[in-house]
Length: 449
Ligand code: TRP
Image (cartoon, rainbow, N blue to C red):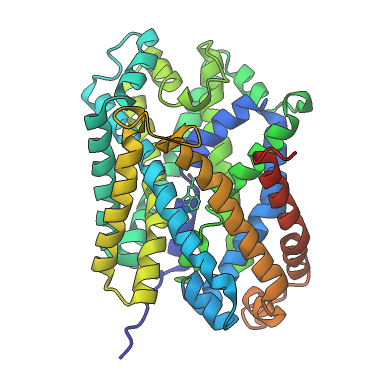
């Protein structure tokens, strides 16, 4: 007899898990530094527009595919449109998830190393000007980087081995509320620092001169990254949703919470950066160099540092859990592997990619692909190729190919409620706006425009 597929137990749990997937390093690490680079307020405005016109519709397209079939993308496409070649994109999704999680977990390894060192007190005993060296030395030390990455992945797979309800859902139910509570505490603290208003002004003053096309393209890419779009992550999660959840409401809730976290992270970081006279354009170093410098000078710095890296840890592990669930569900559904076997296989594949990426700044720094080391290459192709291509495919599939009654059924839960404006808005964005925007980003990255 076929085993029954176990889904999320509650609607709140399903939302918490999906918010957990969405809220990650993308919100707390990438969004603030991108906003910093691109001049603050104008970038945020364009980002919000991208969420409404691209993010929510593409999220809905993944939800519709996953929830209507309770299958991974391959099984779903076979059921919804038998014989359609679109199913091959499920392999691209799985590959994308493995590659993205491979390099993402290296950064998570840095996070737990910083957490450990702050807790032991060894991080903040250095002088402020030393933090840049410390970070450089750490990422260039092969043993350390590999060790922390493997520790992180082990924790990640331990949670997954407990299953959807007891592992994924329960972790999200615990970690997400704590993450929000910590963020609020950090915001209040940051806003009370002397001179913090300059940081708030920087973040929210709208100045289009500083934005440029690059900033617009960055904002679109960031929306994809932040909402976990394009590599069938949301198809996988929504295949575990209950049939009576209101997909549009859930998508709006999830995107709003995700955006809120990104903006709150900006409110944590920039007032502090300005208050201590540091450079808001520090880029990717912002979290590992600028923030320790700030904590070091703050009363109770060690506690703040530990809490901050705990917050980052919560954000990152709930994201890697979702990325790892893609190949796991795929193997269980399509190859009928047992969940433990699928987890071990995924762990081995992801582990190899992660170790190679962790060594990109040391032993393997000479290995380059298109002129980038392994880590930077994956950081480039993950968001710029896999997520965008996947986003384009799901938008076209649901917008143009899928039967309207499947969409209507999913939006109204079989006619239980109305979707007078929702359906035309989703379809219009999926048919026209998303494909055009994604093609423009592709052309931009490939240098055609
Ligand atoms: N959204 C996460 C972040 O902001 C990253 C992430 C998790 C992701 N799962 C994903 C990105 C699936 C793309 C696809 O950090």
